[in-house]
Image (cartoon, rainbow over all chains, first blue to last red; front, top):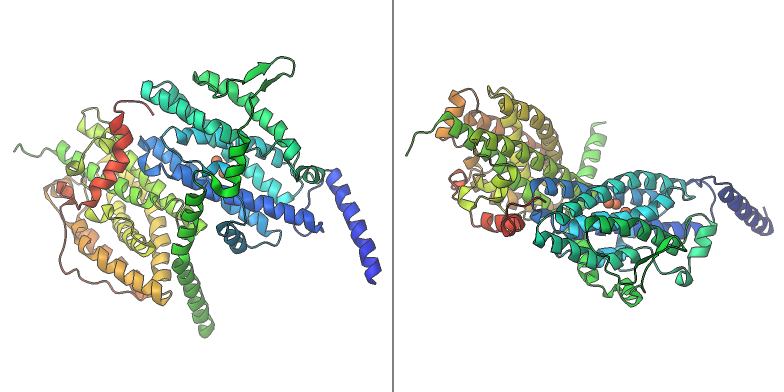
Length: 321
Length: 255
Ligand SMILES: [Fe+2]
Ligand SMILES: [Fe+2]
Ligand SMILES: [Fe+2]
């Protein structure tokens, strides 16, 4: 094959690839794919994996202080699920030729991102159910769309993850409801958590479409299937009635039902804050990365010992054989 | 002092088991999100969840036996240090992963042999709880014995850390086999387990795993005890302060 033929071949492959995508066929690990598609997916899936792992921290902060044994058990199981999601997602990213070690190093080096929502502190018990309901709730809106994403392993991981996220969101809402039906102190806690988590949850959908540079290509490749603003609207529309049901207030004076659009309007989002958190200047960016790095560093000797032991066992087997 | 009734003894007996599960599970849950790697984060939480489930069954039953209307949360959140009856080993800070592994392994071996015997209890509820719990105990024992071997026969650093952890834990071991009048009454009634028998099995199992792990089990220079009388180390107060504070600040509410 001459180099000339190869160029032609790549064009043909790209066309064929796009045809498969357009025909709603899944791309599998062994299939040919454009380098940029692979890179985009590794970036997106590893970011998602990091979000699950870093996402253990804010809620994990309340495990030892949960107000009842039942809530403690629900919370522990939830945080465990998130660790499990991290695991499937790292595996999905590995099918694209990336290694978990590399991905984790990139996280610790500040090169890889994770969802900014986890850079907010959990300051009262109410933050735990608020996160389950709002954050997992927003994640579901994003991820239901990803269940049909073009890359097979990612799509399958999302189907599994979504089932568990829905369970988390329901439990979170149920926890909020207990507070909303409680005494004054509990109601205050509940409203305060909504006030602090409302905008950060809406920002989970990313910048508005006008400012979202990667979106068009991702839509064409069917990695992404709806725009950031469409997904955000969907979340707002489903969540505002839930806040009303709780008897709480939406912390946005401009939030109103728009009869004409058939959607809720919302006020101006605090974008300055959003970009500051993305840059690493949010309330907990520093602490979250530090905690992950510390766990990793303190685990070094454990991982080394496990490898050394495995090698010794293998050597023993060999000398017997 | 009034005489110990069988009902009192059963209450105390059940409560002690519950306290051990709660406090050990609490220490383990402190690893959540901070484990040495993701798979083991999940593993540690698994065990913590089992212990939490176990303490809930035991507290509920203790409350029922007591007959004063106390539920699991009253017993877990509204008692002070002096009323907690867990063994001192359970309340010690989590330390490094070597200490957590050794402490957990010691507890796993104790639990395995204890709950295996408790399956034969004449108290139907305790026997039923034990039958459920013993399955978890077998799993915890296998899982942790593997870690003892990996770390005990791993690198120079891991071996050193394991030896330090063993030395550190050793003074709390014998407390786990002390028999008092509550134990004796429960054994005599065919409800409880003879801890002398548990001790013999505990030593045999630990020594077997340690031999494979190339570790030594030292005889402690001296023993610490008192947990069952509420005479704890200074560590427990902080654990309870953290664990109980929301409930204590807002008592009597639904969460
Ligand atoms: Fe997620
Ligand atoms: Fe998740
Ligand atoms: Fe979740």
